[in-house]
Image 1 (tube, rainbow, N blue to C red):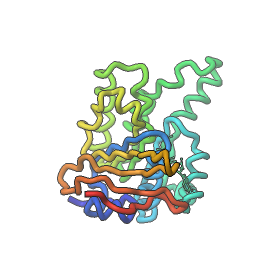
Image 2 (cartoon, protein in one colour):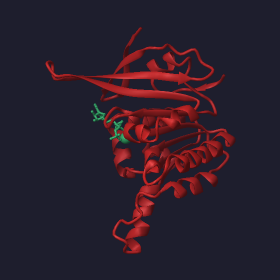
Image 3 (cartoon, rainbow, N blue to C red):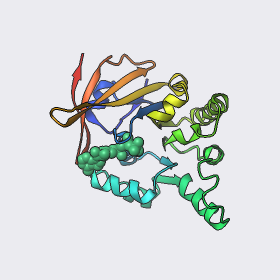
Image 4 (cartoon, rainbow, N blue to C red):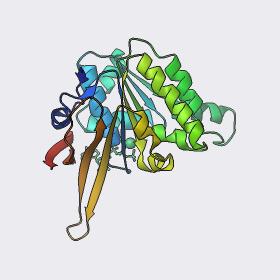
Length: 236
Ligand SMILES: Nc1ncnc2c1ncn2[C@@H]1O[C@H](COP(=O)(O)OP(=O)(O)OP(=O)(O)O)[C@@H](O)[C@H]1O
Ligand SMILES: [Mg+2]
């Protein structure tokens, strides 16, 4: 199966070349674990390789992501300016709409139909999609509604042949009974382990599943450096 580079050398090695082309991968983990940075690496590398990429943001400001990418030496702004990267900020769009309707934030969380509408109209030329953070869809929904919506999004992207990275915060992942883990082709979990005596935190990446690839079943120690995520060692 053809792969697209994750943008992280050590992770490409663990995954036999990268993310499976045309499939959906879910990355989950607690706040600050590196989910957004994983998405930035993926976008930066694939824009660099000439692919058309789209980033859908549901919680963060576009300017914050751009400045985070710049600080990691993975600047996304030139790709945005050249049109190779499109950023659709569902959260900011909604906020502007609500502000103009003077509803004081009511309905700000309900962005799922906006995501589906946007993806339904996505160009067939788009190769790579990152959605950060799909967890907003878990709010105000029962599990069946959430599953229906997540399925429609997955099907739209699969039919379009997009290689997709879904970012989902761990709380929403647990809240939805980890259902999304079954619905995607691959699942990567980021975890951290605090050592109270040394005051240091160790970060681990675990490829819980990757259909069609023989991935090592082990936790890989990684670090977030000024150049982004670096895989340090793999634990058997
Ligand atoms: N330039 C940098 N150099 C070193 N570490 C950094 C740098 N930029 C970010 N970090 C580290 O990465 C963490 C943030 O990573 P990231 O934004 O990917 O987390 P996240 O999993 O997306 O969190 P959230 O769930 O809150 O969105 C920061 O807490 C910080 O520790
Ligand atoms: Mg994030």
